[in-house]
Image 1: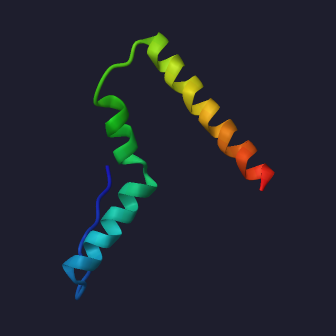
Image 2 (image 1 turned 30 degrees about the horizontal axis):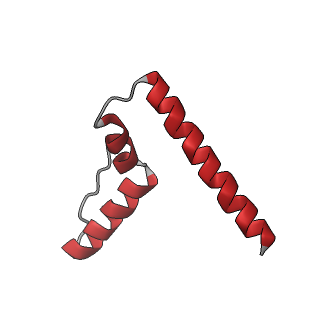
Length: 65
């Protein structure tokens, strides 16, 4: 769990910025989205394969340039 304490003389905006950075580094948002709904094993496999195809297309497109 990300936790940020206000330092003496620190503005709320700076503390919020530090909190957002910490949340992003710990991949908390990604984890929450992943657990927000259930995927059957077959669906999970199809999604994983689709992402792999997308990465490969992007990689080959990048290599052609």
